[in-house]
Image (cartoon, rainbow, N blue to C red; front, top):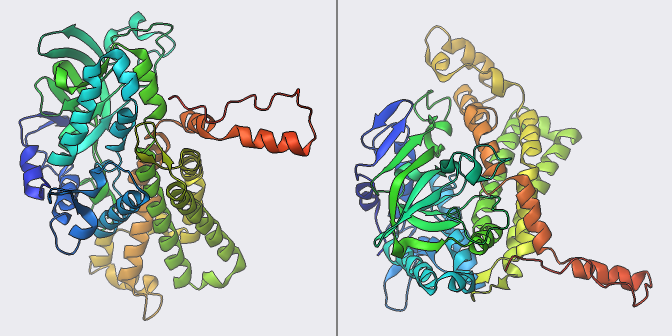
Length: 492
């Protein structure tokens, strides 16, 4: 059943042990650093009931029950278009960008749905478990997030050769389930309901079995979990000067598993490195779409902020300025083209789902992430030096300084000082603030590091066709191998 915002808030008031900035947090729904994102997630739930947004946020199943569009298993192109429209509606409604709110993270479980043959090699019960949990997500609408990277420790050593807790691992089996120890970094974990927890990129050597090769769904209200969060940006500076930092910072958590029981029905794979390797290789088969879609919205923000700034001062008539705007537009439309084409040429997955064209999706992710820092710098240049030297909102309100700032920041009758200040504050927070730097790093690493992005392209690009056309055009003999690199060398 589709939840509403209040039901979500109530669900995370479960006594979980959360710390931030050296403080024990008693209620994440009211704490200044968590409340903005809790409110946004609650708003997403309420949009499913709001008459104005419910049609784009929800769908009716064959029994007549309503469900969230973002959680629906994708079987058709229309399913993907609906997901894209739903995400766009959320980002437009809230006026900013949030990434780990469910539509991106739930797709990782669909990759494991595709790997049921692999799971059956380990234990047929695990295959049944993934089907159960996907159905549970659809029916109960939890806030589902993702747990990937561990502290790792000395990466030149195997996990077994150092403190074993540096990678999450199983320490004991019981009749009720497995006991796990270690830690995971999880964005949004402190205010989510459950997390798909799986191995990071690791070196198991030649071992077929490993206590580190474990994947499960973790109830984030479980006993013995400890949430140690980085200090958030919300509440640290005035909202008038940092409108994005105060509303859209998704707080990251070092989640400590201090001998946590994972019931057997929540275990998706265990002690099987093949299953762990499979899920790492195919993890973003679906979720990369929603992730890259955020970069499209970020490009829109950069273009809009830059264009408003140059039009204010008349610089948009200069060819050099138009060329830089065109560079931003090419970046934006490059992302848009990859997303659109990935659905237009979507492929049937091993599990019978419809997955975005893998080569186009992963090359689109490389484009979006690898060029982001360059596009931010172009946007900074177009916005001008005033985004880093403009006084704060308090100075515009102070009777002793307001008149001077009114004089020097008013451009004409259409652009008065307050609107100019608001635009510069938005651009500064988007491009120059601590929040902006954090988002840049997050986009670079959130779905794995750049080398893994390129590795996904390598595994999914159709190399055989390029070899075929050169073989024919160059008139090579039939003795020359037709393809040294297998086509679509995917992990499955």
